Amino acid sequence: MLAVVFILPFFFNHIEKRHGVSLNDWVLSQIPPHNESILIFAIIWSMILLAVIRAIYDPSIYITYCWTLIFVCIARLITISLVPLDPPVGLIPLTDPLTSVFYGREVITKDLFFSGHTATLVLIFLCLKRKTDRVIALLAVIAVAFLLLVQHIHYTIDILAAPVIVYVLYRITTYFLYKKVSPEKILAKVYAEK
Image 1: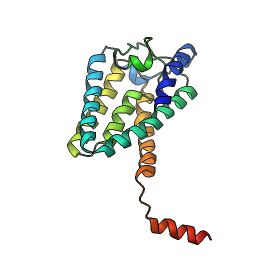
Image 2: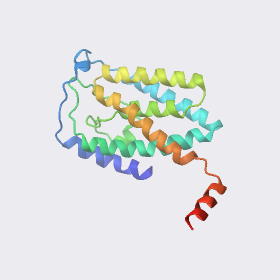
Image 3: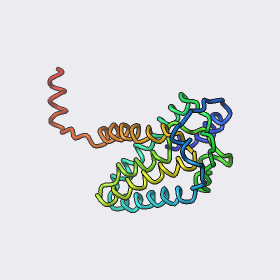
């Protein structure tokens, strides 16, 4: 994770300089842009706080979140590299003093496919275990996805792709973290191969 965090400022600096494609997004064309930065980050940081509180009592939440987040970050680096996009028309930059540590001081507008904000909340939703927490997290995902569109931060496809990609990565991660293999099965396999 430290390696990914170290790479991010260089990566974002690189993608901001390249030319990309502008998409004709029908959904965004129907929504007038409006700055919702405060509400977006209030929801995101509140959900992160909830996940941290739950993880204090159930460390598997933290372990699952961190391991999956590594793969989500790598997937974003790959997809952003492979899908060069220019920012949507009417984009109003998000302002959050906490993320400027990772993004640097410059405004990043081309980290589009797929949405990291949506991905973060979807991952929290998947990691939480209590039914009430999951309902709250699902509402947070829907609200932030809508607010990102209102602020024209992402194309619709960026937001729709995030839950699908995160779910696949979550399932792969949890399979490897928590697969149940008994010592008897391992020994039986070793003896069968001889």
